[in-house]
Amino acid sequence: MKFFLDTADVDAIRELNDLGMVDGVTTNPSLILKAGRNIEEVTREICEMVQGPVSAEVVAESAADMIREGRHLAQIAPNIAIKVPLTWDGLKACRVFADEGRMVNVTLCFSPAQAILAAKAGATFISPFVGRLDDIGLDGVDLIADIREIYDNYGYETQILAASIRSVNHIIEVGKIGADVITAPPAVIKSMAKHVLTDKGLEQFTADWAKTGQKIGG
Image 1 (cartoon, rainbow, N blue to C red):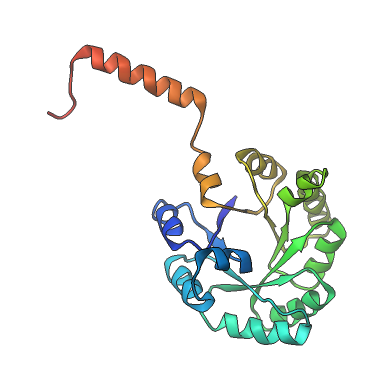
Image 2: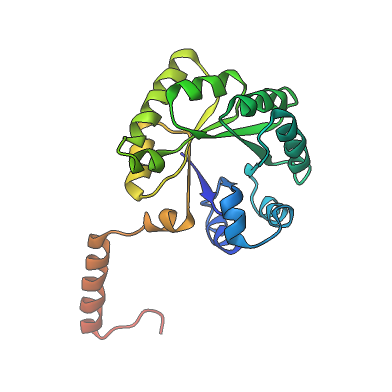
């Protein structure tokens, strides 16, 4: 499973990237706002740091304007994945970008039917939103399972990029299903290292070691 970081915080990206934990990055207008920086400046800095795909999202609503914006964003760096919404106009833009040999991340996917259309339009990545479906009482993990089954049935090469990941359990569940990629905030990725029994065991080892009166290396 590939790990993408869902953030525009370059310091957070750098910390995990130095550990070899980052296969790519996803950004969106909300994350750019949170970062408080110019979109082109921060995206370029991320692209220089991370070798994998960096999703930069268009904000236009018409296909023609999405294509214009996407081409502009693609000039920032060769590892840009143009992010378009799963609307009819977004699918039109996706087809154009795919035909131009550009990476495309089709986002805001909430149904298997939408995912089929994205694959047919040549999307590199499809981003089903797990957490947002959970928010309205549906099971977002089920959506990943449905898309995985359909894509495998027909050999679609579009990668399933599980998005709106809120918890470690989300990561585990979509991993069991076979999501190609997850994108999550850095804090969620880091929380994967935590377990109450790890903390308890470390506490016991530390206490027992103190009782020996020994030191390692001096």
